[in-house]
Length: 162
Image 1 (tube, rainbow, N blue to C red):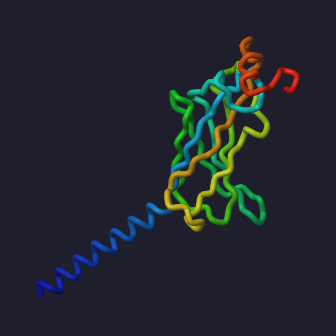
Image 2 (cartoon, rainbow, N blue to C red; image 1 turned 90 degrees about the vertical axis):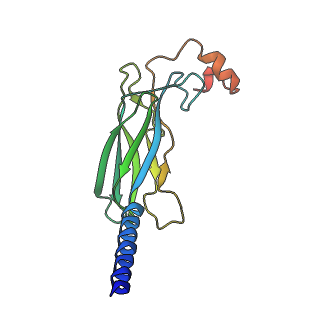
Image 3 (tube, one colour; image 1 turned 45 degrees about the vertical axis):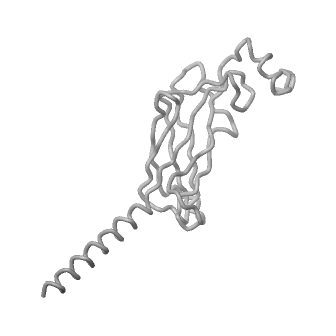
């Protein structure tokens, strides 16, 4: 009888751990940054500043109908980084992190092409980790900094190219 009880307890513990594991596997952490493009050049530079308190949203759309199927919002921390938990596998959907609102009114124009970042939120793709890293997204400053000409020279660009 003791052996049967021990076997039952072992099976129960194994079943519980498999169930917890399955739930963990359907949870994703999406991590990224939001910056202010202080030179209005379309990408991060050494003069870019990260924006605390900015709002972002994860939007997942159905592959076939393009209907919005899931959303969750988050805010950037003091370093301009966000971490958003997604509690379900979105295997049949396209998911993007999108800019919603800048915390800086002097840097509030979304940078077209840098205003969203695609993320894959399924385990059916060979990725081992459940952490997904999104590309940085940015807003454009109302006016470029005076030092931008010098900064862009580091990248072998001139202001005429922008």
